[in-house]
Structure formats: structure tokens, C-alpha cells
Figure: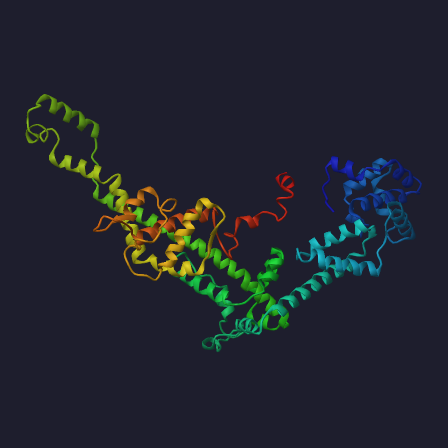
Length: 503
């Protein structure tokens, strides 16, 4: 029970009603305060306190003032006497409660196992639901120790049922593949560790490291290996995220030799849940690495071009003064030559510097960045395209972004083909995929004057558009968690209870 009670909370939960005050005043001495405190405590908690100090002192003082008693009488209340038993029985009759029987405890355990344990693993949460259930049924809770046994038994019963369900849904091939996760690699079996050498499970647990192309390719390999397993996805998707998170954390924390000691249903269920969650994590991580790499290609190109321009440019100071002197000299001798009129006022080298600075800005800067991006992508990062398209399945619920999905399909069709441009008969989406400042580079004309789509440059534009839409989840990825279908974030009964969820 809470220890700090604002005055308004005391008024709401510890105020004695007239009939309650009458019953308390009918008792003698310290029994008056003890009866009243037990009654209001049961009103609030749905149970009796296990010991006197469980009742907040401020609540005892508040109840004592209402009865014109001294709060110091509370410690004198006989906690193990016959009066306590009589008072409890009287409060139960007054509030319509009865003591819970063994059958009631068994029924409560079955209810916790089927209704609460599938959605929560925390004992405190299960215990709170148990108290709430008993209160609804008008039952006085059993002792704290007995209730803990009921709660733990309910959770264990759910675990046994869930593990058996998952175990029976696995094929013999999948069971063998999962068991192999716990077998140390032959090259490492002589290591002096408790469980032997490194196992495939430990390899799946390991992080690939910083964002890089080899990180993406490593994630692709791991994800393809996990997808080769036939897991009971329907059972796992029906389970609550809290339950799956609990199993996944346990499988990630225990050493392989500890996992090998568990019974087969529990051992394989831990591995199944770990594999299922790891597939989602790797899919999310793969998308995040893709977003970071596409950003890196453009950002590095811009930084390098800016650095080169800063090294080449020679900033010319006092441009406005130079312009005034040029205008003055030109107007003074309108018929003179440049060498005779302009160069004496503003030197030839200064004019060259001004021209170079002007040419280095605007379109030339953008073209230099585009050239650098194409060189970087074609020489290094293009290797990620084929495995990426083979591994990830992109979807969109918005027709506005269908061109990006169609463009990805074009890229996938021609992933293994050679050629600088796409065939003339191929319908390649441009609108909604290629930004205006890239179109002059993407669309080029052949010897006959026909417009052809440059493949490498088009791939860059598709990846950049894909990155933008993944970040705002207009495009989502099958099998992902963070980048899952945004419609899955909406409650299943949202259409029927729209007003409730808006509130």
C-alpha cells in the first residue's frame, strides 16, 4: 500500500460512513480503532493487512480523529487474539465476502494461467490481477505465501503449455537445426570454457559492429540462415510481446551448456523465440544500415567536394568595391580596350579568381557531387543492391509511393544483367522516384536521339527515395518490427471503437 496520502485521498478512501462509525463505536477500548482500520483497509485493498505496520501511519491518525481516539491505541490492538478473528468475520459479512477455499484457489490459478499469464510475466502484475479477481468474486484472499504459490504455479503452467505447443509444432528437421545451434564448432571444441567452443547461437548473438558495407552483407547472411528455419510463426505471433521478450532475454543470457540442461520443450522453445525475435531484429538492423549507408554516400561526396573547392577557391575580398571601380573606369573611357581600361584598375588575376569562384558555385557544385556519388556507389556500395533486394521485401499502403515499389521491382529484375542503360521497352518509373536535379543525369540520349535511363544513376535515386520513405514509414518491410506495417500499430478493433481510442 502507498505510504504517502494527500488529504483528498484520505477523504476519499479512509472516511468512515455513519453506519461504519456506529459499528466501530460499539466496540471497547483499542478494539474500536482496530476494527475501523481493518474495515477501511479492506475497503481499499480487498484484503486484510498481514501486520500492523502495513497500514500507513497517516491513515491510522486520520481514522482515530474521526472516532475521537488516540492513534497510539493502534499498537495495542491484539493482532493474534480472538477479537481479530471476530472482527474479520464481521467485516466479511458486512461487505459480502467469504474466505477462499482450496477449490477457489485452484480456480484462481486456472484463470491466471489462461487470462493473465499469456500477457504478462511479472509476478507483481500477476499478483495484482489475482487480488482484483478475488475482489470481483467477493473472496477474501488467502495468505500472502499461498497466493504467491498460486501465482507462480499459474505462470509455470502457462510456460509448460506454451513450450509443449511450440515443441509439437516443430518438424524433425527444424528440431535438429535448432539443436545444432548449441553444438560447439569443431575448431573450437578444445577451448577450456565450461561449455566448449563457440556455438552458432553465440554467433547469432554477436553484433556485426559499426555501420559499413560488410556489416550489411553479414546481416544478410545471418538473416538468410534464420529464414531457412521453419518456425511456428502463427503461435509466436499470437503470443504477447512481453512473453516473447522474456523468453528471448533468457535465451540470450544463458550459456549454451545451461540451455542444453533444460528439457527439450523448454530448450527448443527458448531457441525458437530467440530465432523469431532475432529475425525481426536483423531485418530492422538491415534497414537501419541501408538508411545509414545511403546517407553516407551523399554526405561523404558533399564533404569531399566542399573540401576540394575550399582548397581550390581563392576568395576575393571587396567585391562591391571592385564592381564600383570597374563601372567608374568603363564609363570614363567607353571606347577603350579591356587591357587599357579594366586591367589597370582590377588586375587580370583578380578577375580570373572572381570567374573561378563564380563557376565553382551553383550547378557545377551539384554536378561534382553527383559525379562523386556515382563513383562511390559504382565502385564500392553497389555490391549491396542484389543481396538487399533478394533479402528484404518492401511494401507500401499508400498509392502515392507506389512508383518507388515499382522502381525496386525494376532493379530486382535487372540485378544480374549487364548494360549501361535499361532496354528501351522497359517502363521505368521516373515521377516520384527521381528528383528534378537528377533527371538530366538519369535520362540520356543515345545516338538515335532516344531517351535512355542510366542504370547506375537510377539505382542511386531509387535508394535515396527508398531511404526517405522508410524513415517516415510510408514504405515498410515484411518481417520487421520497428519498420513493420504501420497498420499493425492500430488496435484490431479501432474501426469499431474509434471514438474510445481518440479519447
